[in-house]
Image (cartoon, rainbow, N blue to C red; front, side, top):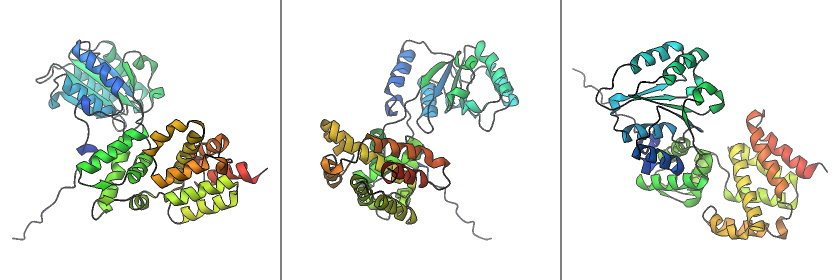
Length: 352
């Protein structure tokens, strides 16, 4: 008999491995946590909640934690992805299930993710249940697009607007998880991953996992991370800022296109340039911010940014920052993502 090949399981994703399991483990949603904990303590639980906010910021994690905090067992927690189960038949089946009692919990707990994707008929069917819900049922509707949820549904839910995690929160997450995974990560490398995560816990940990996968010794330097995520080197971005400071659009545009040709993502290039121009302006107009900026930038970078905050960087002003932000927002619609950034530089320095 042929020997059966062993099948190894894929490692658990970092986002699932480090998914918060208690209110105390949730990051960046302290106000919402305090409200829910108070509601539990005073036994004032709503029959329906609407969790709204960006992707990967903890809405469904919060829902599961709330369910478990109410003593709901896993067999009485029902999750439905409305993006793939969006019709009236699925909601009718859900409504039929609502009428039965939980197995061994006080509540049957329903989590409907991507709720905005439900059809008009599905919303109508769900509304009838929300209007007269059984006492043993709690709903949590999670959405990234609150404006697509009908007002009749919103009015029957307690609405919780989730905050997008700050850059500092994401950076600390990267440092904490990397340490737990036995990795040593340079602070500037953690900065790049946090920036690339763009306000999402899930995306940030996905990038960290990718970086850890390609690292041989789990000692993550800024240069190593930059190569993985498609980020320009700190020196390259500083040279770009130097071109802007001198008012030399040609030099800055050449640097940008050389970077893109070498594999740097224009979107990330713009994000890093924006963060440094912002730092220059903060150092110029709010010098007390230097203490906070020390945690974001390395010693050499901070020294250069301080230099640009003086007369040497007079051309770096609020107009430059506004143009760079506008270019960043235009990039997803551009035929070539670097074009909006080039146009911004033409407007700032090329066309007088």
